[in-house]
Amino acid sequence: MDDRMTTPWGELAPTRFPEDPRDRLRAWDASDEYLLRHLAETGVDLTGTVVVIGDRWGALVTALAAHRPTQITDSYLTREATRANLARSGVEPGAVELLTTQDAPPSRIDVLLVRVPRSLGLLEDQLLRVAPSVHAGTVVVGTGMVKEIHTSTLTLFERILGPTRTSLAEKKARLILTTPEPSREPVTNPWPYSYALPDGIGVVSGRTVVNHAGVFCADRLDVGTRFLLQHLPETKGARRVVDLGCGNGVVGTAVALADPEAEVLFVDESFQAVASAEATYRANGVPGHAEFRVGDGLAGVPAGSVDLVLNNPPFHSHQATTDATAWRMFTDAKRALRPGGELWVIGNRHLGYHLKLKRLFGNSRLMASDPKFVVLKAVKR
Ligand SMILES: C[S@@+](CC[C@H](N)C(=O)[O-])C[C@H]1O[C@@H](n2cnc3c(N)ncnc32)[C@H](O)[C@@H]1O
Image (cartoon, rainbow, N blue to C red; front, side):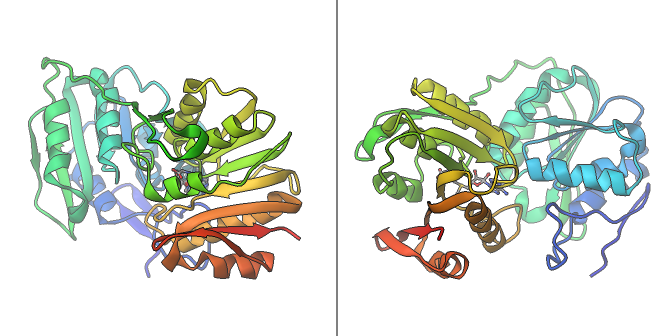
């Protein structure tokens, strides 16, 4: 596999984060290359404020670094990859502004580049958040693989920013070309979205969940999460609990409600998720202590400091297979747990998490199961 990316601004060798030499997945694709080629060939003026949304691993802002772009991302992993890729390319610190989806976007945007995200909700929220900064002269170009661009994707550009067309496909990638119409009626942003939880799931029954755009299962309770909520371990006393990959924070909030003395740490690599978890926690007036952290797994959590880790591992993480992320999460949990501490995992039966837990912890116990899901417990010896 060629691990160099050819761009009109020179060759790059971007990598993903965390870097894994066994991981042969590239840190860019044909849609990134198509977008960059288009900017150079059509001579887009890049002297104003250039904003890049949805850059997967920082390849776009690294290629455009000379134009001092701003990156807006929901992902901690993307931001770390971007930092590493910029440094590897010798870009001076500060040349690229790194913002998260929770930050206010620049007040004026002259070039808006959008690598379409997997979540339509996140795209909607992002376009609505930048729309007030877009003016009639803003160049708006979206990009994605053909299979990622649907009619609903184009409708969002059209409804929020202005008339939209697509380019011809090249190497299975396509561009989205929008002519902004800032005079149109502003569209109301439906995010964040709150809903009431159903009955039959213990202490959180009927409680409110707050979801910022892009969060896992933002419009209803996930069936797997529901199963975990019905089989949570009883915790009593001042225990340190981690909701690992917290999403909207419903699992950690359930623990905090059941055990007001517990200290709950909510962690996710998505800025939108951690903001949602904090909003869910606050919306329920939970007594006790909680910490909300954006990060990669349990990095930074001292070894042997945690009593209980609760985890519903991601199925897809940045197009990588679920396996690698689940394995990293379980490994992290083992390091962070004190001897006797427990990791509880919910997963689809067919994922075979019990094998991973047995290999890592030397034990794995089935705590609950239905035809689709299993709840497993592994104890750190
Ligand atoms: C299947 S969702 C579970 C969300 C929530 N716990 C629930 O059950 O509804 C998995 C979560 O893991 C997060 N995640 C993926 N990779 C991560 C990583 N390296 N570190 C921390 N969180 C990660 C995702 O952003 C996502 O919110």
